[in-house]
Image 1 (spheres, one colour):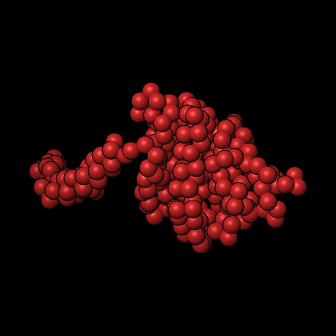
Image 2: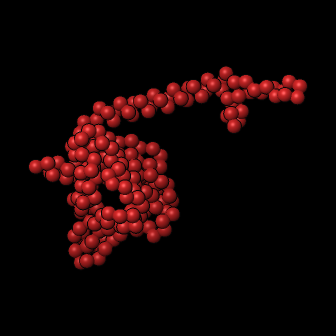
Image 3: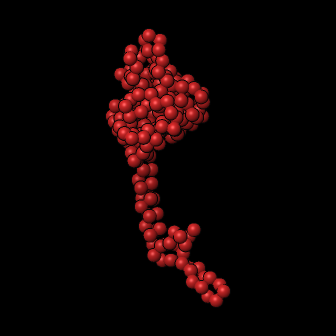
Length: 216
C-alpha cells in the first residue's frame, strides 16, 4: 500500500528485498498534510470566534454546511429545534396545493416531518433516520429538483443536525445537508435551493429567533 502510494521504494539484494522511504513521495504527502491542517485550523478558528446568532456557511460539491450559535444549553437547544420546527419552517415553503396549517416533526426514528394543509391533507417530505437527543438528529430530504416528492429513497439526500455544547448556556448547531447528488440529473437545483439565503440560513435564523423568544 505504501509503495503504491509512492511513499516507499524498494530494491532487490540477492534473495531479499530492501524497502526505503521515497523522499519525493514524502514531500508530496507533507505538502498535502500542510494544506489540510491549514484549512482545518482556519475552520476551527472561525468556529471558535463565531458570535452567537451569526449563521456561517461552507459548501462542498455535493453537500452544504451551515451553523449557528444559540444562547441555550444543549438539551434545550435540541428540544426547541424539534418542538418549534413548526415555527422554524416558513409557511411559504410549500409544495402542497393548499396553504399549510402546521408542520409536524415526529421525534423518533421511523417518524416523519410533514406539512398538514388547512384542508387536513398531509405532505410527508422527510423521514427521521436517527434521533439521538441531545446530540444529533438525521432525516431524509425527499424533495427532488423539481420541488416534488421523491418516492425512491435511493434518490433522496439527508440532513444531519448536530448540537455541540460550547458552555452551559451556549450551543453550536451544525447543519450538514449531504448526498445531494443522489437526486440525479438536476441535483444542483436542490443544492442551490437549500444553500440560498432563503434555505437553511433562513431556517437557522428563525430557529435562533425561537430560542431567543424562550428567554423572555
